[in-house]
Image (cartoon, rainbow, N blue to C red; front, side):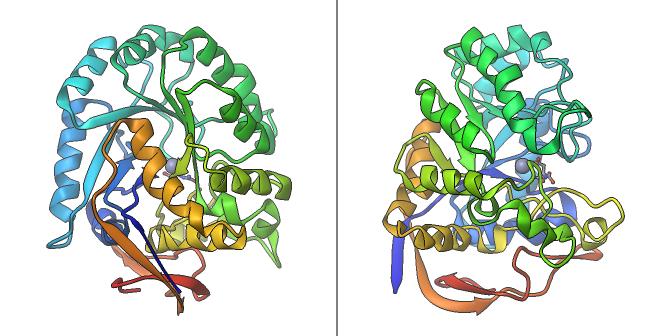
Length: 346
Ligand code: NCD
Ligand code: ZN
């Protein structure tokens, strides 16, 4: 069986920099025409000038002949000003600003400590039509890790939507039924990305036969009813749910560690994983809208012109990919996937 769809985009991606960037970029560029590139480098990408320089490094790292457009995002800090937003908007290369609550995830230490400090900046984003991309978890140490997204909706997101009804928001990598319902019940300016791992796995997978560091990501995997709610939303055809892999590469030694990093690498099969999940839900016909239409429409960008073809033909994911002086262990390493991308090397 073959499935040809309009070329998709990845609306939430970590590409890193330097040797890591060179190692992972070909996987994404083979599948996706564009991606929103997360700005959580160390140090973070906080200005338009830094975003332009990072964009140039990404373009320079592309394999010859690859057609891929990085869509840049700025990392909001307590010091991001309305003038920073004006510069970002004027550049034409910045397509959003990312809110990392300080301490929420990998490289978020420079993130926002209290969103109310950014009222003027967020108001300028609303005026300029610049989307806010949100890592939606509270960070207080006494909040249970499985409740952090739901608490964020209550404490931060719902009040923000009420305060700034014109602000366009992408609730990134949603993981719970509560988040699915929040997005569906909100106005047209509120959308969400969904990762392949949250469509396919529940938290049991983290402990299947022993602790599985390569399945640790943030927000953490949730319950089976949450997973089913996400899958229903993804295949529903609702225009405000769309693809964002959150592919987040980390070197093997930093994952297989007494204090392992959060992040699942999925770019090597970034569309194939979704095909598998949609097929399991009996909804392959909905894949194209989720992967190739809804995100572009929300961001106000044209849908891509070309196509990709997926073939239902098993292949085995390599045990690892070279990653600078270490190895990158991809999601489902050593396992068989049902779908492969026509013309792609494994
Ligand atoms: C991401 C990373 O490694 O940069 N990790 C992750 O678990 N998703 C950061 C993020 O998106 O939270
Ligand atoms: Zn991410």
